[in-house]
Structures are given as C-alpha cells and as structure tokens.
Length: 246
Image 1: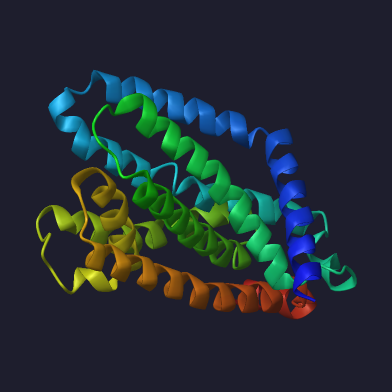
Image 2: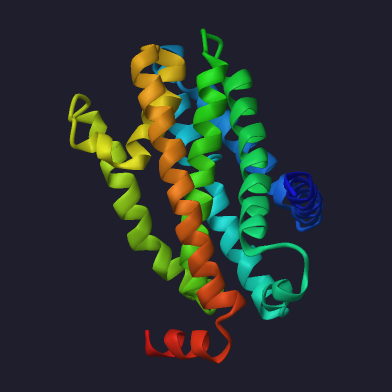
C-alpha cells in the first residue's frame, strides 16, 4: 500500500514539474533569482550576511504562495480538481505533490542565490531544510487562500492580510531578536533557520525549529487537505454558495 502511495505521489510530482516548466515557472524563478543576484552583488560584502538570508527567506521560499494560487484556480476553472474523486490520486496526495513540486523549484533558486551571491561560510544543511520547510508552509497557505477565491484578483486581495500577518512577526525580530513570544509564529522559526545557516545556530535551537516546523506543517497539511476537499473537490454547489456568501 505504501509503495502504491509513493508511486502515485512520484508520478503526480513529475507531472506537476513538467506542467510548471511548460507554464514558464522555472523561467520566472530564474529571472527573479538573476534580478536578486544583480541587487545583492551591488551590496557591500559586509552587509550580505544579513541581506542574503533575508532575500532567500522572503522570495524563493515564498514564491510558491503566488504560483499555487494560479495553478489551483486554473485547474479549478478547467474542472480538473473536481475530477480527482474518480482518479486513484487522493486529495492529500494531490496537495503533497503540488507542495513538493514548488518547494523543489524554490530550493534550487534559493541555493543558487546563496552560491553566487555569498562567499562566506554557509551551513547548507540548515539552509536546505529552512528553504524547504518555509516553502512547504507558504505553499499550503496559498492553497488555503485559493480554496476561498474565485478569481486571481480575489486571490491576491485575500493574500494581502495573510502576508501582513505572517511577515510582520518575522521582521519584528530586527528589534526583538530574543523575544520568546515571536518564536510561536512559524514564519519566525523559518527565518531563524535560514538566518542561522549564515550566522550559526545551536543544535538545540535548530532541533526545536525543525521539529516545530515539521509538526506545524504536518498539522497544516491535514487542515489544508480538509479545506481543499470541502471547498473544491466535493464542494460543488455548496462550495459556490459559501463563496457567494463571502
């Protein structure tokens, strides 16, 4: 049974990566990465240990949130999502495939920026885990927003308060680095993990951040899949009625 599940996820992942390449997602990531490299190379070397992790946290890792909205709404309009019920692929397998495909692209872009823009010492183990867990988190948030959106414009409007709520706590670290309260926000753990790859991170703190993000993303996956099923896969007329009321 597990082998069959892994095979379905693998096939879906390959299909998603091909779709993203066909739609130009890879090109967009490369262009954005190139633009950031141009900016970062103009920043004095002494400031790059701060600028590089902030850029990697706030862009390659988060782009999945933007792209997943377009992907889901396009497939929703084409009736692909509603047909999942008649395919061997389960809803959670579909979500996992989408999340992993965008996270892989984000990982490539983030590591590329780090390799080309930063010449100092980097713990790439922490960086890779940080990028993946950050991208997984934000892509799932994007799915949740897309589930409640009928158009791309509505998706972007709904995204604004989410972005503020998620990014403000992370950037409050600039003034409240030692705040224990801020550690309760998953985006803070994401930023600390990515930032720690450049500035050092104790094994204890890194272990806490990793465990917290793995558990949080796991719980979020269950909730995201449930919302995806209720509002899109099995939503039908009921899902449209809910949307109209909002």
